[in-house]
Length: 283
Image (tube, rainbow, N blue to C red):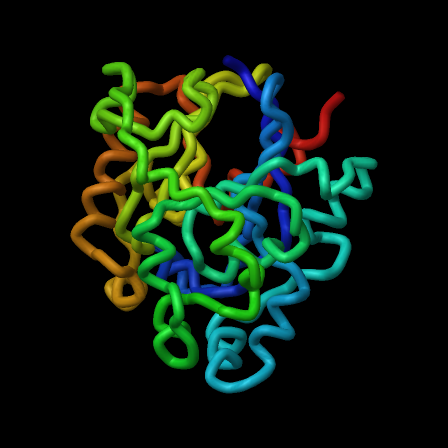
């Protein structure tokens, strides 16, 4: 079943390009935080992550969370939040039925509190890994507790409590995924490594065809196409370096096996450009 995907740029942080991939420049570049609005013809509107919001600045005001803001200087404003962008298109925030949380890094959950009616979807292993963490322990995980809704546990559905379904051979080397609605419209693929319990979403956009929202399994399209690992210092912040390497290799293989598939990393410059072009608002 086809869905409609709109990409939303919620702002960016600045970091050295060489940290993101081998051969990158010794130059600060913007890493945009892109979220996705997914409109399902039967089940309604869903979000893939929520990117940044200005709540990030409040959450990083005090030590030790202020370290996060200093290490990754963020540029965003009120009008760039997912909620503000939806309202600008006359889409009521309460019409969002659910939010697919790829993982719990702050640049992916910055807007969760803006959607108090939405059902929340994540992997249980991801939430178990950050649950109850505060202070330095949270900071090490790139997690800001103040960004989390107070009623998170009342609204969450743990997708990985169900059994995954086999994927067609075309998606090799990925062999299984969690079929959210049982209609193959949104299939959640385990991408553990960059963060514990990270997942991506396979979908078919009604205009652009097959798409794989791969979150932070790669930080750029160049990285997965050319199989370029990030700088060793960047790998230190990953929860499972071996799993990260394996998934980057899988993405590389997938891109070679299925050239028609659009693989979209969250922070990629090419994906940000697509926000302003083919995956922007359309009637």
